[in-house]
Image (cartoon, rainbow, N blue to C red; front, side):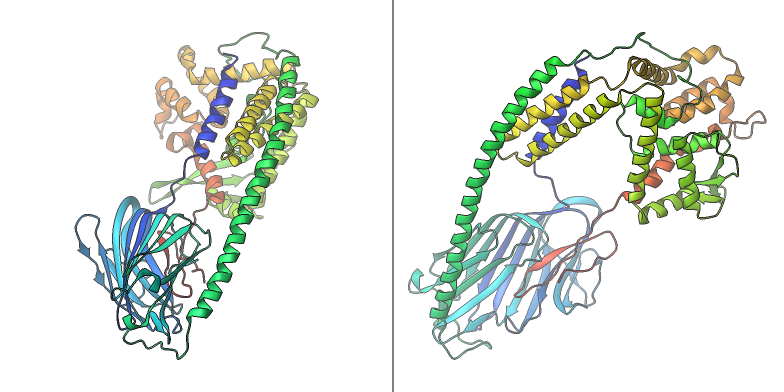
Length: 611
């Protein structure tokens, strides 16, 4: 039994390291993005894009092109087809929509001055793997010079928002060249991880593996002039020499970047070896310290059940502090229980808000009573002060008001957490439950454990180093576990709190009690809420005291139990805190020089597009 926590720490670290090697699925991810481009003799280019994509909670996909007459004249002949199973042709509409109707598409200049193709996928609240083909013609994509004709096109731009496992491109020329050397090709991408080749006398192919969103994929090709009969973008000068000079310069810069990346890798490996040696020494020191630590205190008496509060004026925050070995609890863990305790002490009242006879499950009205607060403990005073601050001079507020208040002041949660923790810690020191020097030592090793776990994840690609950090995380966790944070008195009180919680979970022993004992449970439910077992306790209470299910019983006087019978007020208050700090992201696409940007429109409200 005493090794359970050690085993738990080891398993948690192993799981974190394992998760570090697994790619997290994005909301949108392309399994493959394929471009089939046909260059025509009139200088136009017919493009068919095939998107093999995993989609989750997305209404609309789109692709944008910056309108730029120096790159092309216009985009025409747009069609969108789903080819997941068979062919389903989408219906064209002629108005811009943020959320496009399912199975419809539009292709037009949008309100931001870009040419946009957008289509409705209809997966607002679901996920699926789909295949789409988007076909279009780029007019005047080829520029004709005296010596060569040039294709210079970004198939994917630096505003493209979706990662892709693989990008494939096939460019077919109007006719065969005499030999492959007559076709000059270059590929540009930020990560230098692509390949481009002339594979046949009339074909160019390029590939990118593990494409990361925000990186451009650009192709430049010089093809024999006789292949292009006409282009509106014709220039009366030679281009070959200037292109070769420019591409040579860029190639040299790319090679320098590659060498710099290699040098950086060597430096990282060297530093990693030094770090590894340093932390091997630390590991040995931790093992020595672990063996020197005194044995951890054990409860004077092992308790199965404890039928009452360890002390009469205990607060939920104090109980949580003792149950968690003095580790700071989240604000919401004690916040809802303290509110219920304030209600029990008649400093506030709680009411369910109803509308047309129906209870609003997530909204509770809190009325602040003008009562002397000297009887309250400091953490409860802080909670009451917070409610008054939210009420802003009024004597009433709702859980919805709390949510709105915290949305504007999210740091308030952290500050209240810290203040309550300091108050509780000071109280427990006064009550001779905490060894303050050991508590500081405990916090030091818990912090180190967390840092080592983070460093193990960060260095997962350097497996030996990651293993050393993982071992140090385990050792520091074991050291923290063995430090006596509590005095013997504190250990005995913690045992009482644990037994009290167990008693509330298994209180069949109360079956022989008379109905007046129900008043005790109104107070106990406050602590059950703090421990997260209020629903379980209330369910048992309804069996033993069936009268509490009668909302109109004349004998009924327990307001908190009355409210809990209708809605879990602890969850309700907690949700008002969680919803204030939670947020959902949204994506938008953008255009760039050449063409090829794209992204998704989530179910949420419209976000500003990136330019």
